[in-house]
Image (cartoon, rainbow, N blue to C red; front, side, top):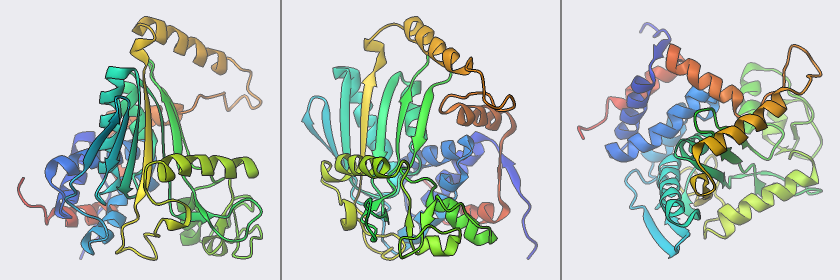
Length: 349
């Protein structure tokens, strides 16, 4: 069989392919489309490790019923500005979208709102959610807990996850400022990529199983990720898990199941979505002027390296998004083939 060449897809084409692939794995079209929106945005931001390729790993668990393809996601209005979301073990980006929508709807009424989700799975990167919120005029603080990969500061066993967290601030008429980060120095996906290519990693990324810094990605995959800022990163990871896991009613710390070791079991991940309706604070011109001035102050900083000017968080992703919309998104041939194979099983909506 001749190997398929890479192909450039438009945003619409990639969204439809991702949607149909998820339908082929059992999701109904509406749910598949909402989940695909997150993964497609991630791909367009340049976050390919958390983009449409994630459908393959989600698919492995969907096929063995480790993830529920047709969840009954339930919303509980605990208070006017507080919502609990039971994801019913659905695909993470779908549960994330439902929680984001609930938080935005409540914040539009109350000015600020918090949605806490439980019964979820890996929900992709944070930045697509922040971007969607920013486009609607909401500032956001969003995070999720994760499978244990980090040892508590001073410990020699993994007890907490590399929990992603992020922030988004809208800029009417301009690009939002978005920070999307995990609490480790480097994402586990980067270490897996280094292991595949046989390249060493910096010794600041991870330790081996005994807790010793290592440059061997294979030793690192059997060891622990190192948190940013030492004990400060450890503290930040705890805060994310306290919000996303403990307060939401989801699993937390070592109660979170590993999707690698136990792919057939629900992970019960938790997420939090804090939304602020910036329209309550002032008009579009007011906010745009302040956001532009804020970015200008940072951009005008004399760079330490003239070839590397100062950027604001999200600037690279925003540029990638514009480029992707103009030039399309090129998919790896093997990934394209896998998505097409899943899509071939989709039933008519």
